[in-house]
Image (cartoon, rainbow, N blue to C red; front, side, top):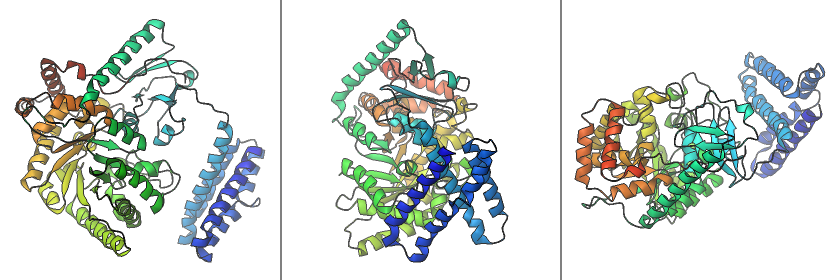
Length: 549
């Protein structure tokens, strides 16, 4: 009861604080909405029912859940649309109360200096729970190495193992672990010999990267003079620091959903503007390509839930933001204002599946551009591009490219959709293969059709960060490659050491093969024969010393 009443009081204070802060910006009738929340928290209202259930012997969180679900059922059955919509308020109150109750139980949790976070299912929010500099590894029972969380973790330089379906999570607390990001394994309570083995791997990796540092300021250019700009995928400011130290020439994909994920509400225009300005300033005058909000699939916002049976085939990416133009318009306004004086912004539209989505998006972007100019901001119209992730878009490349300034391939999702493999499902993760003949044929077609209408084409996905994959993409004609910062030095070293003609011949050879595993082996063999065997290990640094959980 103490826990519950302290949560009620804390939520009341939160709501009152927000109401006071917004008082000058809201009309009285809008301000009254906060009073509705506060009245629902009166002792005689919702809290009274929770207390009754607690007194019956139900634990506090369970009692709260039962009452909230009961309220939701009642309101959903009402004929009045206004009352039906109060379900959203009730859910929000329930989440706020539960959040405070959970925080109350976790106050004394102290993270050790070297922490491995082990979870039934990792979420982006978890990455920010461990104090800065103390997170050295992540392990998840659910998901796969291609999930959005795993990609974010790699971007942060944190070794991650996903899909360990049989690990006893509850028995790992407090034990020393080695997280092997190369082989996708973990070792609990390792022996001295095992520690020494992983220490040697870590030192070998450090030595390799020290040798690559001298390439930082050199262009990514083949021996016969073919230039391929190497860009980075970012979402956090920590990515930017690492990217600049590795010699990135710009941002090929800035995941704008990351700032949305780490908050408990939609960030304001000013907050978004500050996030975007940091990225634009860090890379100016080089281009920064910002993808508009891409939620849905495996990227959920707690305050904007999307419940679907098939989320990857449902309401996600551009579909969400065009159905909610207020979100799209606010985001583009923040982007444009953030670019003032720098003018290195490029905007990219995710999950495009038809021409009408592009035309509607362009209409909204032009509208915002003129509004921002009228407000006195001296901004240039940014280049606008489309992301090719949906197989249907592969067959409309010319029509799509005709309407925009550039095309970029999201190879992770394109591979997932072409092969009908959910990359977060460990049961079928082994069927997800970037070197699948169908994927390579689609990538070749995209490059050819985009160049046929005179537009540049880039790619941002895990394939671009693989040395062998980067060579094939360069041979296909991709004008830029965007990857995680950790991959950049190795990719640059390989490209600078070969002729483009050599890569073209390799591409022609593998396009004749019909097995993804044979293609991968063929590419690896070619790299080994060219002296790049040391680069074939996945670009992830394992934890070499056991880390406390």
